[in-house]
Image (cartoon, rainbow, N blue to C red; front, side, top):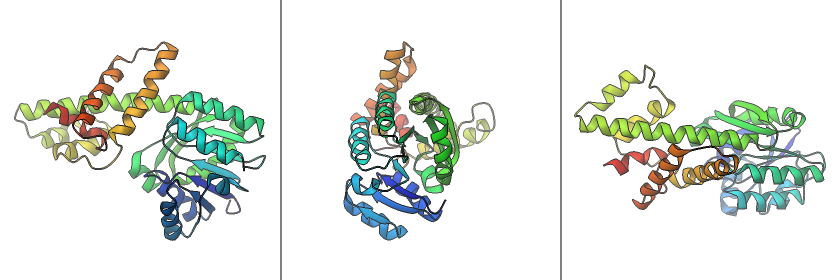
Length: 286
C-alpha cells in the first residue's frame, strides 16, 4: 500500500489529523488547503507535500480524499480536483454534505471513469486525532473495496451502507440522534441543578444504566463546568441539521424534535455560542 499516491484536500480540525495518519502509515501524501500556510504547516509537521491548488494535489493521485465545508465547497474543490485526476483513480468525500451533491459527483466521476464514495465521518476532533472515526459510506462496492484499506487508517469502523448518497443519509440519521440526546442531557442536568442534586454523582450512577450515552460519558462533566470550547461547533451542527431537515421535506419524514433542537441551537448562536461545542445547549436553559 505504501506505493499509493494519496492526496487530502481540506485541513480543518478533522482533515489535518486525518491526513497525518496517512503519512504515519507510510503513504506518500500531498495536501491542499484554501489557506496555503496551513498546508505548509502540515507539511512541515508530517514531512509531506503541500501544494496551492486542488488540481496540483489531485494530479497523478490514486486516491483523493477531501473534507471541506458545505455543498458549495464540495462542488468547487471536487470539480477542480476532477479536472486533473487520472482515469481509474478514486475520489472520497468525507465532508458532511447533502445526498444530492454526492449523487452529482458520482455522475461526474462515472463520466470520467473515476470512482466516487460519499463517506462522512463521526467521532469529532478527538476521533480524528486518535484515528478512531466511524465512516458511513455510500457508493459502488468495487470502489469501496479498493479504498477501504486507506479509510481504515484513521477509522475505528468503516462500512458501506448502500449506493451513492447512502453515506450522507446515514450521517443525517447520526446527527438527528445526537441532537435529541444532547437536548435530553441538557434538560436532565438543568433539572438536577434546580433540584439541588450533586449532578456529577447522579451522572456517575445513571451512566451505568439505560440512560448511558457517549454524550453523557464525554460531555456531562464539562457541561456542568460550563466548558464548551472544544469538539463539534454549534454552527456546524446547524448546517448538518438543516441538511437533514431539507432531506426530510423531500422524503416526507417528520423530524419534529430535530426542528425544535435546531431552533434551540439558533438560541445558542444568539448568545454568541456559534463556535461553542454542541453540548452548549445547556446555556439556553440558565
